[in-house]
Length: 309
Image (cartoon, rainbow, N blue to C red; front, side, top):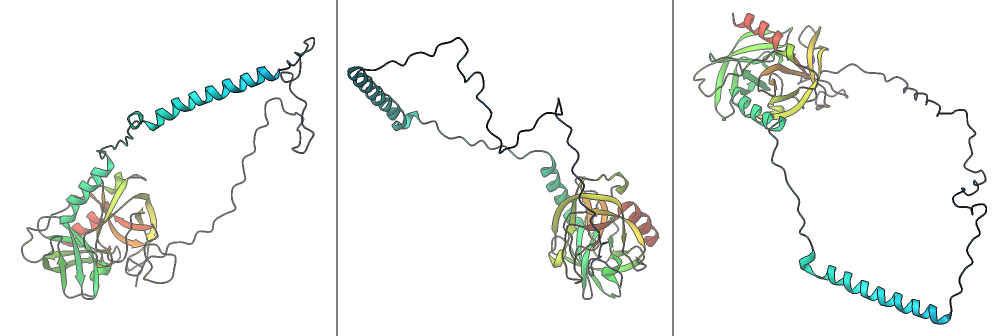
């Protein structure tokens, strides 16, 4: 079976090269110059610290016992007054300024747009149950067409969908493209609770764009994880043929059960179909390590049109 989220894709093994050499440091101005080791004899005092030539150092003044005692008494008195003044200032509660910790309101930028995108997308995402396999899918039109991965419904005769409100619907498989790991389902019955998602353009994605992965990882329906576009046009092998295909790489957490769910941008538009993850171990139960792959929506749209027609 081809690698996928149920049997995670194992990414290429990278061999790190030698660490880059430190760049040469430019010599200081006026190089070369004598360098004094740390263990060398200390330098003589600077001219400012030594007596100037032609200036006689002042003769120390001898203090008598009475003068010395008077100075001590004045110092004690001044110290007592200073202590009384400062002590009174700190002892008075009215003189202590209240502590203020200002708190800013939530920004109107990426945070609010991501939550809005999640709220708009969830009603169009379903949990797919096909025999013993589970995955995710999403509605693409008002006629009840749902897109998922081919490996999610592979070999299944009965497929059911669980909507975001908990309602369950039956669905039929009307088209499968195993080489591209895509399948189209047709919902049977009332589709009023299923909202069709807006399809974006994967060609407009840029590295660093925020994205959301929505689906049912490990059976946890309606899970939303956030990340960025790590790379575009990344070569990865998935699908029955195992040929290299271009994919969107993302660090949004996707795990087994996310297969077939949408990858959406901050505007809530579908830009990809979550399909595979890279793992470090040999176990198919390995979880997300921050390297996931999604089929670009531009390619998905062309394939799905052919499957429906």
